[in-house]
Image 1: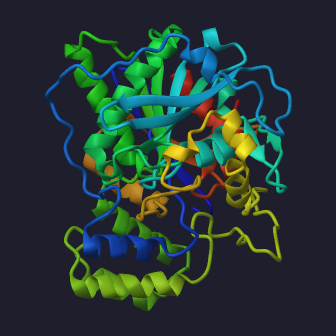
Image 2 (image 1 turned 180 degrees about the vertical axis):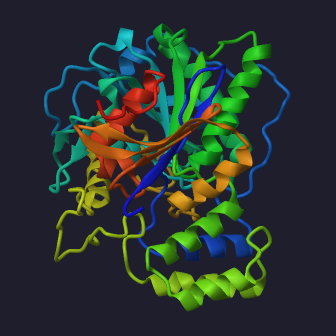
Length: 450
């Protein structure tokens, strides 16, 4: 299992979809962060899912004439030449509250022949633009100088038109003029994301009938399926835009807290990050569905025992001022710092049409307090709960004649690993991630050996 990451595919409307990629970032001690959030049971973005309403009322739709042209990015500072168009700006989702969500959209080279894909980062409360676009699957990465960009040849806009949404309000460049909006939850996040999509499609009407997919990572295990569920419900009763949803994809999805705790503890143990003694105490004393105070104490021991490592890729070096050496995958562990510098540059914010005066502070990668890894064991423990029969038994899939990972197809759900990757798959294994994503868009399983 060394360095693997796992994906799931879900089916919507009898079409193949994918589930499983990564999420928000915290440098160390994700289990400790999670434990603390469960103790106080409060968060900027609640850990506990509030059900999406089954009732429908027409959502706010603004006037979008001419806004697409104003949102077009002429060229980002330090950007190399490319042959596709890109846009960024705001979509108001609540004019009374003054709540507006920031997006970044990168078209494919031949956009009319390719589907539309929405990407949501997790956290909760982490930037889909700063992380998803600028360090993972977007067309550009930031150089160490924090001023210039280089082209990512494995960007997902090779095969799709990709829309990155910073959600909920308060994340990244998204903002609200009503301070209370910065305390929110899953239900409001889904509702705002739906309103955003209805309005965005008014601004970009050529995408209204395009095949549409929702993708994301980590806490997007809540965001993605709840948004998909809301879309499917509203599509049946709305007299507004019907969204042509075909499938969803989530990496390392945080869905169930019980599976999360059991999965991360067993992952720590099997990866030799904690001792046999600590693991045994946790197993003997913890009911993961209702952890006791004593259980939290033992989980705290595990969190401390892991030590000072980059928990999202346990074999990677840390970013430090004395060493910027790349990880085994070739990914620079200091990339987040380069992005932070770049996106807080006035010239960059101006090129992105970012309203920094409307935000509560400078651009920051995450506003949530529950960031953490979601290991492969978490997903594997969740799979039996689906009760789906196996259609295609476990097999190795290939990218460039090397094993890219492993696949097992269930009825309507596919479980896929990406070999040699940490939590952020397109960052650590960009070529394998693109091979996998291309298969997903094509409605196929990842390729076997020819």
